[in-house]
Length: 151
Image 1 (cartoon, helix red, strand yellow):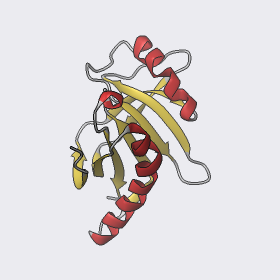
Image 2 (cartoon, rainbow, N blue to C red):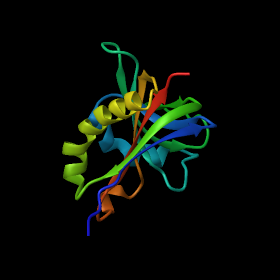
Image 3 (cartoon, rainbow, N blue to C red):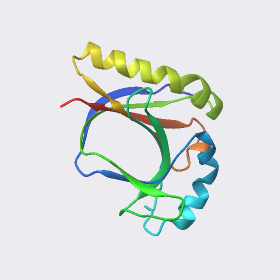
């Protein structure tokens, strides 16, 4: 039976998260397996990341996977998610289509509203989507968003 998750917390990332990938669009999700094959130091349970970096109109999207150390290749590089406080939104949906098409866009706005209600200022220059390994096989897929808190 489906039970909706929609949890907000403030978390602290004490050591930067290293993401091996590339700038581009959603088409890069088709190269996740290639990234996993190239990365020498990928984590055992390797999440996928989508990072919105920068301020409009100069932001860009960076897609990649968890790695242990900085890595470089012909096509890929490492971006380190900085240490600090983040608003984490953990949510799910009845199926993968609803998660990606209906919930994702709404959750960013809900996060902004939650931050305002809790007197937390967010840094809009970094927004992180975390897709846990195996989420496409989950009965009720779930994922996370992180919004950097201004310090």
